[in-house]
Image 1 (spheres, helix red, strand yellow):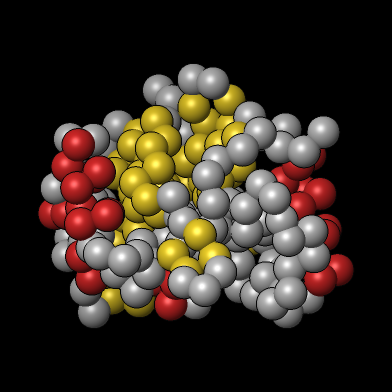
Image 2: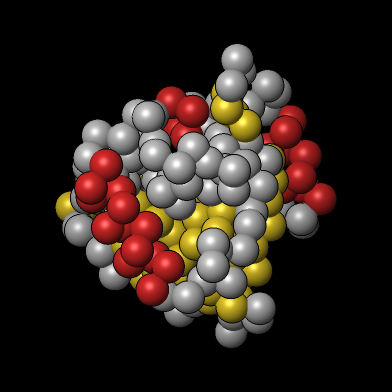
Length: 183
């Protein structure tokens, strides 16, 4: 089985900010990546419904990192497990584990990709058209070339190289539309 990836909300950054919110479906897995700041929660819930799912159907939520523009609307998904760089959270259970290599499903795994923050995680989904990387290693396809808020620019460059070495077909950036990787 391969995963399907749907952009629920295409993010932006400027005078106002919204994170790109992504739906990944693979068998029993219904995951939302980065349910952060948006102008209206319907911008997440309506496209989710159009994809055939309600908020209660979401099994997992992944945070690329802990900034509010990527986490603010996590409570929309009451039945979900929540994933970050070092644990899975479900109800009042905190299960410690390293995100590196953790599989959410046969076609979806996490990778530690520090740079923007030391705790950044990229969600990797094998789809029918190739690997999709949902990540904050890029803000948008246009840049910025150097992340002005990166905690560790050298680590960010190394993490970008690592993700590009996986030969993704598509990158879903933190604040923009998906794009093919740079040549």
